[in-house]
Length: 386
Image 1: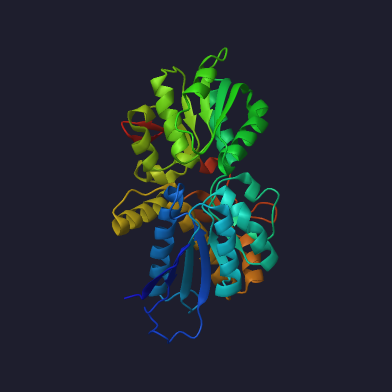
Image 2 (image 1 turned 60 degrees about the horizontal axis):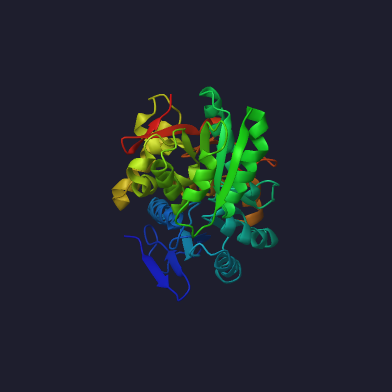
C-alpha cells in the first residue's frame, strides 16, 4: 500500500504523496518532486477538487507501477482557496522550500497569472489547468496550459451560431479573470464570423440576480442569441434568470461550466443550453473509431470508480497536465527543469482528454479547434450536437 500523508496548515492544506510501492519507507534515495496549487476549496472548488483527486490518484498509480525513470513521484499540493495572493505565496513555498522540479496546477486564470512570473523567474516548468488565453499568449518560456482557450471557445460557439443562421448576439459576462478575458476574445473575433454584438452586459462575482442585465439584453433590437462567458455559480444564475424572463433565443455557455454541477445548479433551466467542451463529457457517445475514445473512457471509468462521483473536464485537465509532464520526464531521462521545459515544448501527438496535443515554441497549449465538441443539455445530460 502506498504511504499517503496529509499535512494540514492554518492557511492551506498540503498533501504529500510519497510511495512505498516498490520502495520501503526511507528506502528511496531520490524522488521527483512535483508541486500543485489548486482551488480545492472556495468558490472555484468545482475546478480544483476534481483536479486534486486526479493528481493524487494517478501519482499513486504511477508509483505503484514503478515510478518514472525508476524514481517515485512526490506530489506536494496546496489549496489556494481561489485567492490569487494566497496562490502566489504558496507558489513561492513550492519553489523555495519544497524545491519542486515542475508544477501542474493553477485552477483559475487569476491564480495562474499571479503565479506565472514566479515560475518564470525560477525557470521551473508550470503546466496550468486554467482557460484564459493570456496564460500562453504571448508565450512565456516556462508556462504551458492544457485546456482549450477562451478564444477557441468563442470561435467554436460562433461556428455553431453561423450554422444556425444566428448573427445578432447579446453578451453577459462575468467580471472575474476568465469571464473578462473571454469577453474580450469574443468581441475580438466576432467580425471574423459575421457576428454583431447587439448588447454587452456584465455581472460581478457576488451578484445573485442578473435579471436587470438580461432585461437589457432582451430589449436589444433583433436579438438572436445570448452568450455567457463565465464560470462558477454566475452562469447558473444567468441560466435560471434567462428562463424566468422567458427569453426565446438560444443560450450559449462556455467550457467554464463543463461539469455536472452546472446542470444541477441550473436545474430545468439548463435544458437546451449549448456549450463547447471536451469529449470527456460524452465519452460513451463517441464513435468506436474516434481516436479520443479510449483515453476519455479509461479516465472516466477510473475516476468514477475511485471517487464515486461524475467525472468533469476539470479533472481531465489535470490528467493531461500530469501525463504530459510524465512523458517529458521519460523522454528527458531526468528531472532537470530546463530539460523538462524543452521536452514539454516538443510534445507531439499526445492524446489527452482535451484532444491531441502538438506543442511548439510558438504554441504552449497545442490544441486546435477540432478538439472541441459542441454539446447541448437535453434531459439533464450532455449530448453531442450533430
